[in-house]
Each structure stands twice: as C-alpha cells, then as structure tokens.
Image (tube, rainbow over all chains, first blue to last red; front, side, top):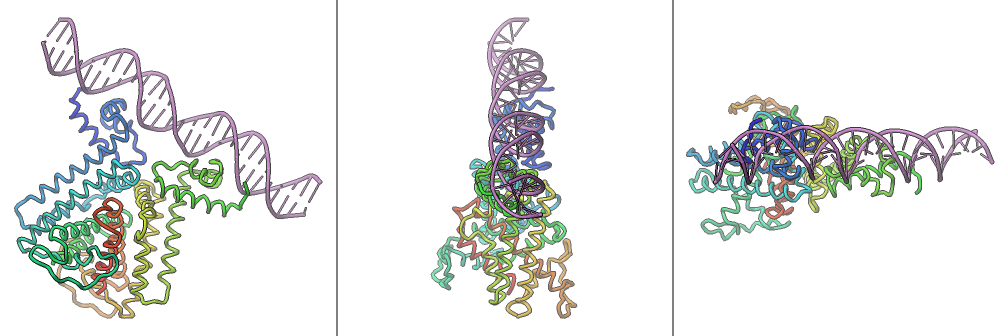
Length: 225
Length: 225
DNA sequence: GATTTAACTGAATCGCCGTTCAGTTGAGTT
DNA sequence: AACTCAACTGAACGGCGATTCAGTTAAATC
C-alpha cells in the first residue's frame, strides 16, 4: 500500500468516484465502493474529503472541468471556426456510449436541491456557452456564417413579437449586441444537445447516434446560415 | 381519521408523493414525510405500496399520466392543428414555475439505473410523441404546413448525407413514410423542449420563460414550414 | 537515526429510515 | 347485534452506511 501525496490521492479518488457514478449511479453510491475501487479504506476517502456530499460535489466539478479542458483544446485549433465548432459539438454529444452522459443527468438531479452542485453546474454551463459563443463570433467575423435573425426575434419581448427590426448599426442589431446573440445561439444549441442526449438514453431504439449527429448539423446550419 | 377505500387512499398517497418529490426531491424522500403530509402513519403507505421503490415508480407513472391526460384533451380540440400543437407544447413547457419540471429531471435520474422507472419514462415519451406526431400529420393533411425535408435528410445514413432525395411518391419521400417523418419531427421538438427546460432551471438569469416560448415557436416554424 | 508530520487503517459508533408485526377500529353484511 | 374484512396505527426491529477515533506506518526533516 504505497502512500501518495494528498493532491495525487485526491485526484485518484475523484476519478474513482466519477467512474462509480457512471457505472452504478449517484443513487446507490457508497463511499465504501469508491474506496474499494482503489483498494483503500473508506476512512481515507472521508479523511480527504470530510464528507460524502463534498466528495460528490468535487467529483462533478472534476468531471466537468475535464470535459471543458478538452473542449477548449478543440476550440483553440487552427481550422476554420465552423469546423472547430463542429468538433466541439461532436465532443459534447455522446458519440459512442451514453455512459459518460449519465453522470450529467444524475448531476442535474443532484443540483435541483443542492445549491453547491447547482452553482457548479451553472458555472460549467456558462463556460460551455462562452466557448461556443466565442467560436460563433469568430465565424461571424471571418464571415463563414452569420447569426440568423431568428435568434434575435426572441429578445426581451414577452409575448408581442413585433416586426420592429430596424435601427441596427454595425455590431448591433435589433437592440442586442452580436455577443449576446451569439450567447443565445449557444444556449439554444446546448439545449438541443442536452435534449437529444436524453432521447438517446431513454429511447435508443427510435434514434441512433448517427441520426442525432445529423439533426445537430441541420440545427446548427439553420442557426448560422 | 376517516377511512377511505384503497383506491382513493392510493390516489391521495400518490399525489402526496409527487408533491413531496417536487418540493424536496427524490434524494431526500422519506415515506414518513409522505405519510405526514396526509396525517397518516408510515405503515399505511407501505401497506398500500409494499415498498418505497414501488411507491416512487407508481408516483412517476401517476404524474406522467396526469400530464398526458391534459395534453390529449388539448390535442383533441377543434381548433386548427397548428394552434392545438402550440397549446400542447405550451402545456409541456414550464410556463410558470419550474417546480413541476424538477420531478422529471429526478425521474430521468432514477430511470438511469432502474429498469422499471426507465420503461415507464420510455412509454410516457412515446405517448407524447404519438400525440405530437398525430397533430403534425393532421396539419400536413390539412395543408396547414408541410414537414421540412431537412428532417428527412437525417434518415438511416450514418455519415454520408448524399443528395439522393429522388423517388418519392405520394405519402412517402426520401424512403421514409410521412408518419415516420412526423415522429422524428416530434422527437426533435420534444428534445428541444427538454433541453430548454434544463436551461431554465440551471440558468434562470440568462433565459426567461418568455424568450424560451419564442425560441420554441421559431423552432417549430422551422420544422414545419 | 531520531523526530515530526501526514497518509492511512480497522474497528466501533450512531443515527436514520424502511419495513414488520401484533393488534385496533371502522364500515359494511347478514 | 354478532361477524368479517380491510384500513389503519404504534412501537419495535434491523440493517445499512457515513462518520469517528485511536492508533499505525511511511516518508520527509533535521
């Protein structure tokens, strides 16, 4: 039983926790199982994370940051903005197994009534939007595509969707900045992806990963052309 | 302490369970709380449902059927198909509070590793799709709108999206029947709604119910015109 | 090589909560 | 009015599993 520095052990434990959640769910997660996965005593897990709740919260943050790290790398390449956007979305979606997605559904559930987890998820979501919105703005500036006006129709107007789309200057139209429009666009895309992932998990017989990928392409094309 | 017939009591208990899940989440649900909500003993809850797990499963099915009942009524009106579709979607979405949505997220989470709950959700989802697809077909037949071909591009082709859209006869085009196209269309719409609901819950500051409703309208218009 | 620090363990503890069970009581039935 | 059956209760049980704690041992420090 080799000893390791606290930071290394913490990483190991977080990884094991994520695996455990992915394979059997948050519902039945026991700290003893996490420990067993690494051949350690349950006490050690608590020693490092004080409480199970904290462990779970840290595990979600850890998993989220990992995904974000990968996404940022994909977004920072030197291909066209459109291609990078496509790469990032493909990474977000469950191309192969739906296993990695299950943890997020469990996470949403946990976040519903746990403010710590909720704010973690809100932050992760904002990060994703920032990445996507950045790519969209890049693509706009490179004139690879333009943000459809349809997105801007959904401004602040609660019910009345008036046809008042006048008065747009450079970098601003329909009262919203390009950055805001891009953020909204990113929000819609992410929402669609989340929803499709759920479909994939609960109705795998009626929808395949391939059709999903196609639908996403169509959606993005509609948003950006 | 009046006595009631088993079926009435069961209904009461199911309703109380749903309320409890909505207000504090599945995570912390105790049968004692459900009982307390009705001023009954915990034993009675078990007496009627044998096990907590069965109670929860029944509660999800109950809540789902209630929503479906309402949706079917909305879908069966005598307004135009488009209007009824819009009504049903507005009922599906969290217009007012997000409270009623939380139970579904909890339900998805529970369904991840519980086959009983999972199949309940799969069935409910199919019902919703049937309703929506029915309305879409109705609208198509009344020529209120036509299903966009974009939906059919996402057929069985895994990667190659060839331009081979020839050979469509009446009631069939691109190799898929209208009914199948309508189902796919319904799937996409429901996925989008689910994803937007999640956004509403985790990022209420960046998105309002009103903008969401707008986005849904835009999405549906794109799908059907 | 002694000392200190920090990782680590094993064996309790302890509270929580689903479930059981033996019995009670109300409402129909004859 | 006795009888029956099913709804219902209260108190106890029992197990699970997070957390505690007193101690053990590896590694760094001097």
